[in-house]
Image 1: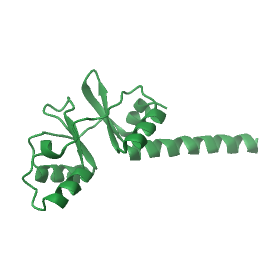
Image 2: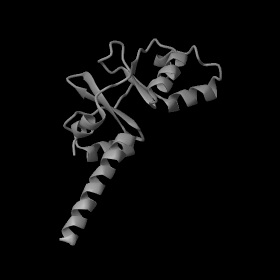
Image 3: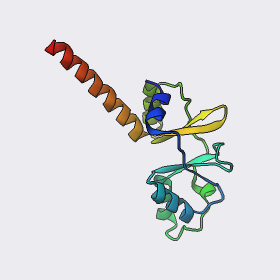
Length: 141
């Protein structure tokens, strides 16, 4: 299965945030869209970084009144990305090895989607259920 198969099921919408936005604005977007991470982008299509709930928690641990801090100060600038034709198995390995939960999908340096660990698990469960059904039908004859 490829990344594109996952995107076809979930859609290509990606919520982005400007590096100049504040943590307060970040929290509002995370809550509004019910997501765990946002791609940081100055123009909505390039990837400057990624920022997650985990980044906010670490900041709040150090600086309890951190609503004014800029996203660029807490984002991860070295973003691991994938392409739509990459295999889900390779993405699972990347997520496990790098301990990351969100991977932007990029084509020609342009953001085209994002895949979360939840999306990967959902697709894997779907594959396993299909295989189980096929085996049950085979055994039942």
